[in-house]
Length: 167
Image (cartoon, rainbow, N blue to C red; front, side):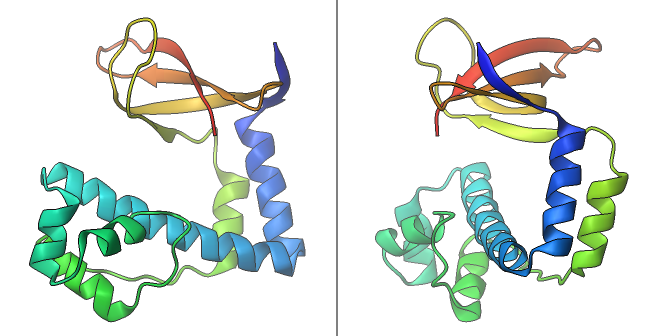
């Protein structure tokens, strides 16, 4: 049984309030968002290109362990030069953008239920397939796992599937 229901609208509203009113939280959010976005973009494009970390490392003139570190959301030691090298190895353009925090806050407050992406890397029991899915709601379970309502859009009518992801 879920211990709390996370409503997409209340999450966005609470996040907007904290970003506006809590400077320490805002700094941490901006840093973690950037780190997560960089890691996900690199990992996503590498996977799309069907390249192993070792191949990207060879092309970028670095080691596989460096690529592995860069693909971790917790890593923040990359430099512009490193990112340019990885972009070149992935045959991609590196694009940076600065988004004013007030625009982020406004977008959070004016958005409807957000459609987020859950990536399922493996299915350990039951049936199903790995891949990226859109989701609209999540429940934090007493066990600490995250119960996610997934909306698969493979057909004209949305097919709802439930998965449990641990963190």
